Length: 561
Image 1 (tube, rainbow, N blue to C red):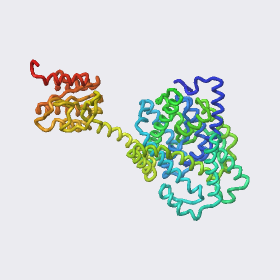
Image 2 (cartoon, helix red, strand yellow; image 1 turned 180 degrees about the vertical axis):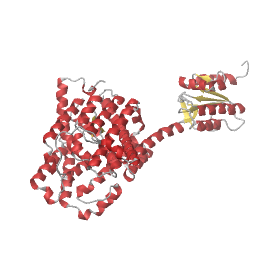
Image 3 (tube, rainbow, N blue to C red; image 1 turned 90 degrees about the horizontal axis):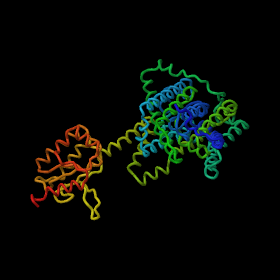
Image 4 (cartoon, helix red, strand yellow; image 1 turned 30 degrees about the vertical axis):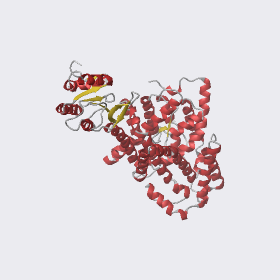
C-alpha cells in the first residue's frame, strides 16, 4: 500500500510551511476537541487523544492532503445519544463502550472499502445533511445550557432539558452566567474583528489562569477537575466485554456504529472532495476509507472515541496554511507534548467555559445562510431540512441520520418514478418543446413523439403505459404512429418488458404503430434479451427522431405518390 500519500511530494519549503500550520492548528483546535469530548460524554483528555494517533493513522493510509480526521461534533453527538442510556457518561463502562463503537465503526468502514462503497456518500443530499447538522447543533446547544447557567437538570431529552433550564433560570448561578457570557462575547468579537487570532485558545488559557489565581471552584464555579496526563496507553479490552452483553445491547452498539459510519462516509467524502476541487487535486474516496478505518481503530486503541473527517477543522487547517498531511502530523506532535507536560493546568478549567466552547461549535453547525438559500430557492427541500432537524431534536440523532438517508433516496426514486415526460412539439425555430401528454396533443397530424425521461422499470412502467395510451384516445384514434424518444431510457427490466409487449398489442388493436428512436446501446441489448425488438417488428427502431418522422411521412403517402 502507498503509505503517507497525503504528504508527498514533500519539499523543504512546503514542509516548513506545513509544520508551522500544524502548530497554529493545534493552538486553535485543542479547545475545540475538548468541547467535542464533552459532547461525547467522555473524559476531557480523550479529546486530545483524538488529535494524536488518529491524525497520524489517517495521514498514513488516507489520500486526502487536506482533510483533518479527529473528534467531530456530529459523530460525538450520535455516539452520546445512542449509548448514554446504557452507562454513566465518563465512567469506565462508558469509556469501554466508546472503544467498542470506534472499533466497530472502523470495521464497517473497512468493509465499505473492500466492497468499494464510497459512492454511498452521493446518496445523502446536501439539503437533508444541512437539516441533520442543524438538528445536531440544536441538540448540542441545548445540552450545555445548564452548565453555562449553573442550573441543574435531570433529563437528557432536548425538549425536556430546555424546559428544565427555563424553569430553573431563577436559580441560575450569576458568576457562572457572567463567565459564560464573557467567553462567548470575547470569542465572537475576535472572530468578527481578528479572525486570525485563536480566540478559543486565548479564552481557555485566560479562564484557566483566572480560575487558578482566584479559586473559582471555591466560589461555586464548577471546574473539570484533575486530567490524566501522559500519552495514551495502547490497549483495547472493550470487545471482551461484548460477551457479557445482551443481544439488545449488542444490536444497539451495531446501530450506533452504523450511524457513525454513514455520517463519517458522507461528511468525509464531501470534505475531501471540496478541498481537492478547490486546489485542483484528485482524491480517492475508497482509499480514504482505509484512512478513516485506521483512524477509528487508532482511536479505540488509544482509549478515545469515534473520529470523523471534520469540515470545520479542515477549514481551520487550510486557513492556517496547511497544504499536506504534514501539517496534521505536526499537530499530533504538539498534542503529544501537551499530553506529556501541560495537562496539569487543565484541572482549573471552568466547566461553563468548556460549555461555552461547545455552544459555539453548536452555532457553527447551524448553517443559517444555507437554510436561507434553500428556503428561497426550493421551499419543498427546505421543509425536508426542517423535518430532518425536528426528528433529530425530538426523537434522536440515529433516527435523524436514518431519516436523512431515506429521504435522500426517496427523492432519487421519486425522480425515476415520476420523470419528465410528455409529447415533443416542434417550435418555429426547429427546436423541441415538451408538453404534457393528452388526447389532443400531437407532434404533427397523426404522429406523436413521446419522451420518457428515465429508465423504464417495474415501478414506473404502469405510468408509461397510462400516458402512451392516453395520447391515442379516443378510439378510433386520429393518431397513427407513436414513437417513443428513448434517449433517457438506459435500462429495461422484466416487468417493464412485459408492459411494452402489452402496449404493442393494445396499439395494434387500435390501428396505431409503435416505434422507438434514439435508443442507447444498453437499452437495445435489453430489448433483444426480452424479445421486445422482435415484438415491435422490423423497421421500428430509429437512430434519430427525424428518421422516425420521415418513416411516418413515407407510410402516410398513397402508393405511387
